[in-house]
Length: 246
Ligand code: 5RP
Image (cartoon, rainbow, N blue to C red; front, side, top):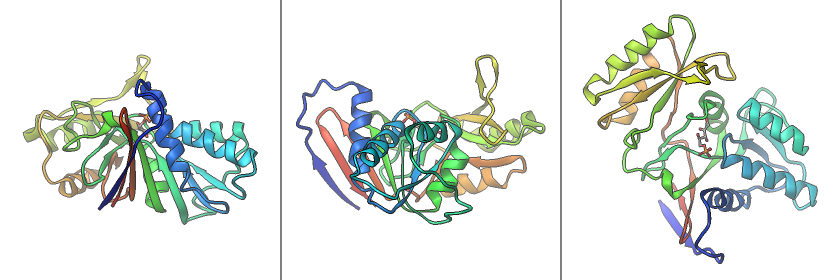
């Protein structure tokens, strides 16, 4: 694993959103004309989408095809005039850029607190290069240890049954599994599914084993742990940009 540190030349009183933008702009430096580019979802990724559109308008990038990871990103990209396609037509993606909710030292991620984990995993898993962009608040020693949730996308059919089974799986880690609710109604993903959020009091142990256990449960569609998928991490902190490769 290699890393490089790039001090910011701007004042150190940047807001969290400005840090996200720094990381996003740095990631867009990896985009070259003619590439098929996975477009991530969230408040960090939206800066990358906007930057790609800006470079296309300026003629500094040409012939980019974007593969959006959510309906929200699809709408943003369409409004900015980025040509779009999908994995059916472009099963190999040159490069994806997306945010994350947690990043561990091996570049494993938790994603999906914005609810787009399935499409993100499909697009980013099909990418030759996946650049993750975060501000330094997202760095954790172990996934699932930040007190925030590990999301799991489940089918609506008997979702409380699946929720209970997920809670049982990680009982030893003090798991509380909660069906995600937004504005007092159950949150529905772009795929018409629900999300169960796993809140863990303790580390869930071996991540690959945890992943297998979750995916084996009937009713589960996908989970938000992205293990071994990210190839590059760009972290923006008050003192600079850190670029780390796997
Ligand atoms: C959405 C995601 C986002 O990438 C993740 O939630 C990070 O979002 P943000 O950049 O807004 O912090 O996985 O499903």
